Image (cartoon, rainbow, N blue to C red; front, side, top):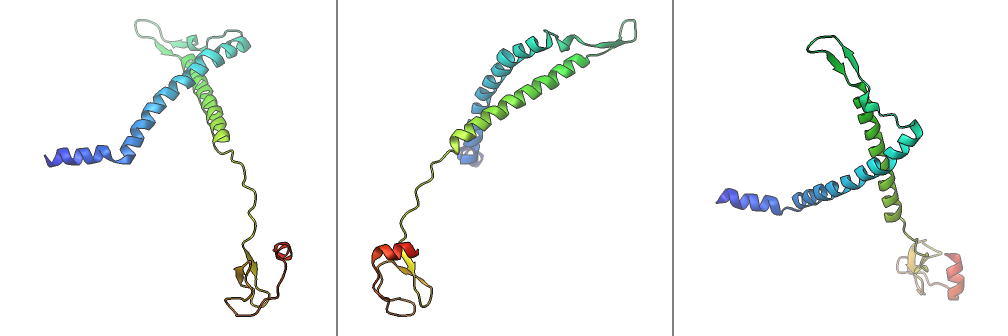
Amino acid sequence: MKIVKEFKEFIARGNVMDMAVGVIIGGAFTAIVNSMVNDILNPLLGLITGGVDFSSLAITIGEGENPAVFAYGAFLSAILNFLLVALVLFLIIKGINKLHFRKKEAPPSAPTTKECPFCKSQIALGATRCPHCTSELLEQPAQAVLEEC
């Protein structure tokens, strides 16, 4: 029974649940990326290259029952497919980051403190005496204090 309790605690941890959600979202995201590569980029690449299919390129060495076949075309296709998937993934994440991190900067707020002219400590804007050095401050209009800051 102790092992069942520990297993329940393990499963209920946040990082395990986060990982499970990540795997599920990753699977769905993989379908999007593969569709973009297979249904959009590969046909465009086929138009550019004249419909050349690299996967059929191979070198056969030896004769008889067991010749050695080096399918370098399949390897080139795998590399090309990897690069296309990486490009699509890069572009999608770049777009998401651009949307996610686009924040409007808040306008600067009005100052609430001013500097004591005697001890240079920060004091409340409406203070008439400095709480640090106890100097009496000259009455200044609020607008003049704002301009000093």
